[in-house]
Length: 318
Length: 96
Image (cartoon, rainbow over all chains, first blue to last red; front, side, top):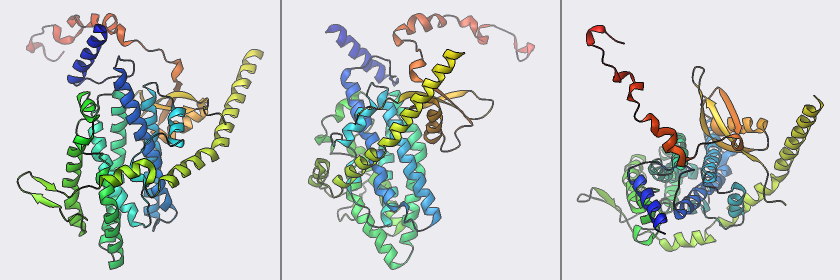
């Protein structure tokens, strides 16, 4: 007991001095579990995050837009893989993590349960959803767990193009015909609030946050990140000549931040519980893809086994 | 359907350009070395990060234990005489 206490104290001390924890270092079991949960959820979000956009690849309005969207979706697949690898360094099994997602047991970001009915949604997702994700991920570049931090550095480098391509789409639409501008405004109206929800519940409703901050897994609270995102995004919307759908949104001279209206947390929890507009569709798409890829995985295994067997025989004969 | 594939974990090392060493980039899953190279190309070199890839089965790597850090690395701490600044050479001698 005292020995365990000493280890935990030493661990905290080490983290407090801004040292990184690496896979073979001693860590409290709860630190490990928190990270496995957070990193795997993050990985699932990247993977499911491909779906709302993949929807538009074949219908992109130009080749330029199409190659960009394709590259973005491919990046998201890659980001999912970096993150699964980071979780594996903590002893998690990738097949288990994937299975939990397919069984509906694992969470992923609730934002991906919203539909993408128009091309403007590709703009709004890049600008707002990736913008919110980047705010969170920039913070996570300094997380205390080494492999997670390294994955985040890589991801952040790659993601800045995601947000820029989204904003460029919004700019084109906002400066286009009245119908195009309306389409951009409509997308902003639909994505604004779900994007704010991406940062998670308010600080006083987020009981695990304090421990994560203490261990420096998180470096900023949900509310801090949300405020940062709003402050940064409002001028960007103004530049586009679009209106953020919040009548309470107002610059506060005193705080130096924007005040904003109440978030509909009931909607947030409802989507998390599985009742969002696209939860079933997203999970169904993942299950279908996994099932239809089964023969590929089997064939790759069979080929690998055959080659290994042949190599063994040749070695034996020599 | 079996839930677990038996794909091994591979560590990926990338040489960014000739003249530099291969550097650890991350890991991935693949059934064999050939597929590991192909996957590494897709996962770790989408933006000209490399011109050469090494893949090594994770299992094949032996790592030192953090518990041994003291006996392994502490002895170097008090050997300042291994560094050039330990030796006093007058300025007149010039750069050495």
